[in-house]
Amino acid sequence: MKKETAVKNLDTIITKVEGARLKVSEHHIVKIIGISKYSQSQDVATLYDAGQRAFGENKVQDLKVKSEELNELPLEWHFVGRLQKNKINNLIDLNPTLVQSIDSLELAQEFNKKLQIKNKKISCLLQINSAQEDSKTGVLPEEAVNIYKKILDTCPNIRLKGVMSIGAHVEDREIIKESFRTTKKIYDELVPLGAKYCSMGMSSDFELAIACGSNMIRVGSTLFKD
Ligand SMILES: *Cc1c(COP(=O)(O)O)cnc(C)c1O
Image (cartoon, rainbow, N blue to C red):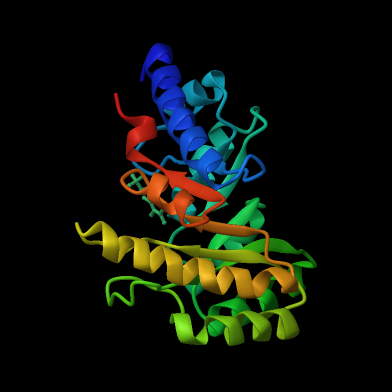
């Protein structure tokens, strides 16, 4: 990826984010996470030069390789993928900034146990399957608030910071919007309990997600395209 391309991609996204967030409120700040799963470390470094600081991966092994190759740069790393139990220790050792994909109470408790053994605390989001799609993980919307509270009560080494969701995988914008609204409603209920991030929106739907209240978007293909 060329430097000019990185600058152009990032500028395009920032301009769209600005437009969308200002329609919500001047004070509505949206954080952009560059999802680098289809790209190489060199492209991450190029985007860093263009000004992007926060990146995310969906496989623990890829997060390890890229964060180690780029450890000279002051990057922030997020984990957004399905977390297998046997990879929890490896993920903890990488000190991610935010684990966005805690998708069950059981996983939270296992993660917490491993964190306690290592005497560490890590910030996490609870993933919600707002579109109720079988292909996706995450807790069901109607159970989300209760599970969030249970994690707060039983997992002292998890710093729970909000929710993450993937929009409905359909063409119909109304259905996608409905899934974002579902997540936002849950997030609003959790703000009094300390929730800070409502992570929703990817390359194809981040403006819609921001209009629905997202304050963290995860963009991969549009940010890294050649
Ligand atoms: C891959 C991925 C993204 C980015 O998807 P794009 O459509 O390429 O922007 C965002 N969130 C999660 C959880 C992902 O796995």
